[in-house]
Length: 156
Image (cartoon, rainbow, N blue to C red; front, side, top):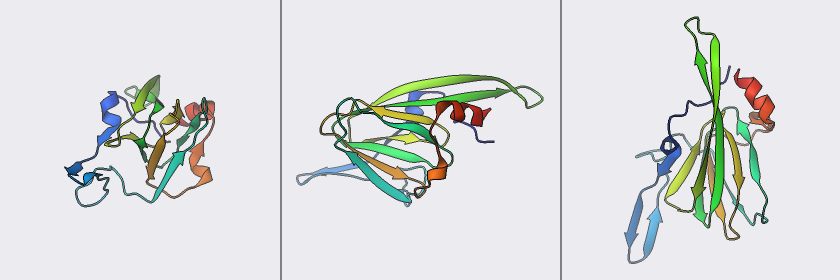
């Protein structure tokens, strides 16, 4: 049975990419090999732009795919939600807690890691927002959970 990531603090989801500055500008590196800055191998990359005011994106969880999102330009708010499941001594589910945290991404040196089985909603995009996403898997429509009640029931 899939399980949501345990949640201890917001900082565990933030990744900081190294930057190299000189008179020509700044080079920011996201790498999944060598000296990795991403906790998974990248199989797909995409970006989101021109999101209309007051629109939201996301509203889903991935069953197995990891994502890391970077706001290359502008600003966006991303809310992650998960379920921490507690087991009793017989390894049966004894309790579960829903956690939620909203992150503001406005810096191209910082990424938000979204592990599998963590609910994600994106909102409050600035007009100039360019949001890059690195994914650990190719697109698979069956890998998404689009309804929060289905998400909750798939965890417990």
